[in-house]
Image 1 (tube, each protein chain N blue to C red):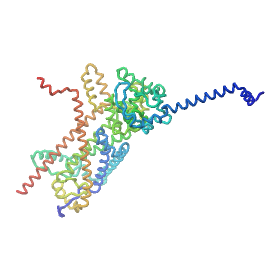
Image 2 (image 1 turned 60 degrees about the vertical axis):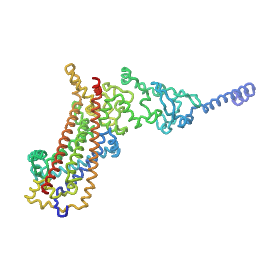
Image 3 (image 1 turned 135 degrees about the vertical axis):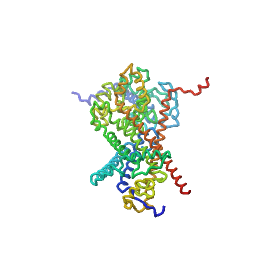
Image 4 (image 1 turned 90 degrees about the horizontal axis):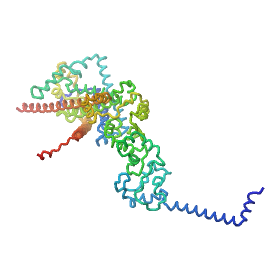
Length: 335
Length: 302
């Protein structure tokens, strides 16, 4: 049996093999050095991007053409590092080129107006799929409304570039406005209810419900759907997140009361007009728990008006009477 | 006003203490609760922030609610003590009662005649009819606010009390919210406008009716304001027993120091509330007339 060192020495004695080994070593060294140095040369590290993107003089005013709408706008491309690190993509293991993939291998100044970031394909395919499959998105497509992009909702307060974390308070407040932009009636009635009153003050902590806390984040289904977060099956669990022990009666809560909405009264009047044609319509409106709320609200408005009109008149008249009496007394005193 | 003015004791220490408790709790409740009603207005958001924001303002609100319950408990304990131990039926019926008496109807009618200069002002008893209304509305208001407030405080527990079949028509927390909100508007608006202007800022009392802080009132004032009460006391010979030394200037100063800021805050609140309601009504008017195409220049077409 021939031992290993002896074999090696014997192989190296052959000058041809020796030359081949040396040459192959040299080539592999060259390849590895060249590939190593190319990483330093091209803008692949975040610090390379920040060389320009932290400097307002360089990138403060840039022209941007919206890829969807074609709008031209002047934007600032300054990246606030602190804000960026606080954002959802600000972790240590994120690189700029992870998302801005069209900048891979580019060096120095790059061409303007990059391709929109593809959030879905490699990272966020699950939420995108649930959003697109949900009845919310399909209804929008049916009605010909343009579907929002990820960035429409997940946008930073100060800069579009920063994707906020889910528990970011400003993002939670912004979501209400974004949903309310289309669902105006529901927005008004939400603001009329307890949760909406507090969030209207700017307190959007995790303990106060915004739209997504009840209706779901990406899978937004109609409440008639059994799988909906507010459907008969899941409602108790959804309310129970904040109200532990929520029972069957609790989930009947009218979260969107319409008693202060002109539209509610209008629809009731229209239903009343069509009572001969379609008696079910008015029945549906009257049978809802909103009826009692509306009656109570109108009664209180009446009570307020009557009380203040009556006591206001009483007060003015008694003031006037006292002053007139005083004058009379003074006159009789002098006379 | 020299030293020879005679003063009578109108409210004893117990009543003054109850009133002070009510003042503290009521102001705390209004200042932390009213911003939620006027959440769309900058003053409401500012005030809510000043009071600690969420959830501190809510906790202040609940503490003040408990103080209100304490005041209400003291009041009913006092009533029970007088009715059951002292066997004093006068607190429920008669001239010393705070409940509406047949004579009050006559007083109201007489006052209406006096408003239109058709007669002299009736001579009032110990409590004038509008004071009785104020008292009764305070009792009713406290009851409504307490019940609805507890429903809002414990929504899960309160909805357990009603079966599901009823709950689909009667949504307890929402009803409680509507009642709580508008009863609060009624109460705060009433106290800060009618009660302040009609009790404290009368021409003869401006700025505050000190009787609720010092407990003392000038005899001439009683004679002028509550003639029947004064005469009854005189006939029964109780007038001497009610006489007390006049309040010192320090007590007057302290009562002013307490009363004037409270009055100012209350009147400011009612000013903000009224202007916001007017704004909201204007907005509602604009909403309603949004779709009406009223082009006044179309008259020139003819």
